[in-house]
Structures are given as structure tokens and as C-alpha cells.
Amino acid sequence: ARLPPPSTTTSAARPSRRSRLRRREGGVDDDAGVAACTAASIGSGHPVSPRSAQTSAGLLLCRLRPHAEFLLVHPGGPLFANKDAGAWSIPKGLIEPGEQPLATAWREFEEETGFALPSRELADYLPLGEVVQRGGKRVIGFAALGDAEPDALRSNTFELEWPPRSGMRRRFPEVDRAAWLGFAAASEKINAAQVELLQRAIVLLTMRGLGA
Image (cartoon, rainbow, N blue to C red):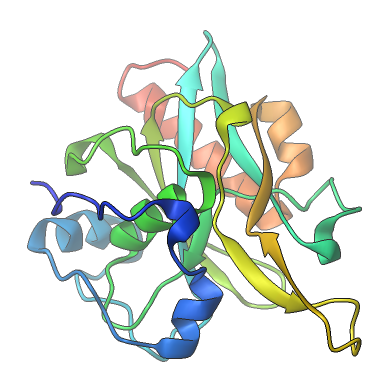
């Protein structure tokens, strides 16, 4: 099963998820195959309810060199400029009303990094389940094998009043850095709750005989 081909609009030209959330135009994907894959991750084949405003979905890209390495991203903008340990994340974004989590993960990966998806075949994605970050935000993860060049990162942007109460609005990248990291280094840099996604990915890769 496959999803429809991605839009020809470049990631840099797309509005950020923060802009989209203001519009709330509704879900964009109800593909039965995506629902089936998602069911293994969150226990339901139904789209996430609009009430789940703090539920995100993301893609953990993995490669074997020969041990597992993970592609993580650092959030852009002034609020994270001086933060490193615990600030990194898998590329992810809020699930829009009626949207399947895997569709969100695919979209956000492309928009936040500018990288092509490693595949559009559902069988190539491993559902990692969900974790809950401090503050209550849920993150649903999917893993896939692939490769990308961090220096080629091209993120979409968001607008923020900065400095605060200055009346000046500036644009910042959603993501300002990407890096391949082994498990130990990734565990130090990633949001603490997402460490479990790394662990689950290693288990699933090992179960598939891919080694980790």
C-alpha cells in the first residue's frame, strides 16, 4: 500500500505547521493502509481526534554503520539557541484533525528537513508506539531505514515576535541542525521521553534481522 505522491511544493515554500494550525483546514489523509499501520502504533485505526491538539507524530530515520545511528534535529528559533542536551528530537509535528499519524510523520519529515522520504511503502515503516513528554504532549513515532546528508538540511520556517514585546516579527527555521548520532550520543541529546523511541527502534531492527 502507498500514499498518494507528495506535493510538488518545496518544503521551504510551505507554511510552517504553526501557520497551518491557525487555519485548521481539517484532515488530508484517510488511507486505509496508513490506518492499518497506525493501528499497530496507537491501538486504533481511526484518525486522531481534533481534541488531541497536543499529539505529534514523527519519523526516526535510522542507518546501520554497522551499529544503529539515528537522524535527530535541533529546533530552530531563539528559545532553543543555547540549548543542546535534551533539546533535540525526531522530526515531528502536530497531527491535524482527521489526519493519520503516519501521514503526519511523513509530511513533517519532509517539511522540517527538506529530505526525501526513504520510501512510500507502508511495509518499510516500523511503528514505535507513543511516548509522553514532560508537560503531557504525546509523540507517536515511526522508524525507517534510510540516509540523508545533514549539511543539506532545508527547513520550513515560522514567524515569531522577537525580541518579546518589541513589535518586530522575524522568521526562524523550524529546525536549524540535523545530525547522525549513535545510541549513546543520541540518548544524551534527545528529549528525555523520546529515548524510549530509540530503544524500541533498536529492538525492532534486531527482530527483523537487520542488526543494531
